[in-house]
Image 1 (cartoon, rainbow, N blue to C red):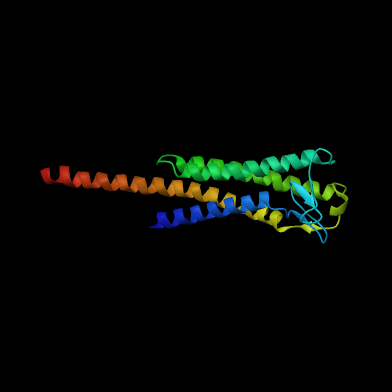
Image 2 (cartoon, helix red, strand yellow):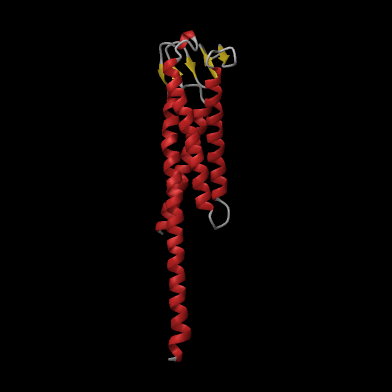
Length: 184
């Protein structure tokens, strides 16, 4: 029963972190102000007046790093979820490793954005006055959730191994009682 509850929490954390990653990657609210909202893909002054971040921007390479690592983090999180559904074996360890890679990609994206955001106020003149938006906050929350779900997969692997070892010991005791003890 404990194993089932642990597994349910692990899957819930994984699904939540994947959903948060999708929202943080896609939605346009990493940096917001009164007259604009921006993300890693575009900067909008209204809902219809958006400028795609391209190589004409001074810090374009920074934006590409953030875009690539956010997309990679989301993809790795989804791959880890599908690997988890494979047959028994080392699936928990493999899922943990892929979740850890997703976690690291997300950490790189959010850290680079945080660092470059403060140093590049001339990135786009309208974005000088603003604050971090909810997509940015969701990225950091997904960072924590991805790490926690990865660690939960590792704990689940250890719990599964110990329950398998206990089951083998029980089978061995039953075997001894059935085959050896009656002959004594």
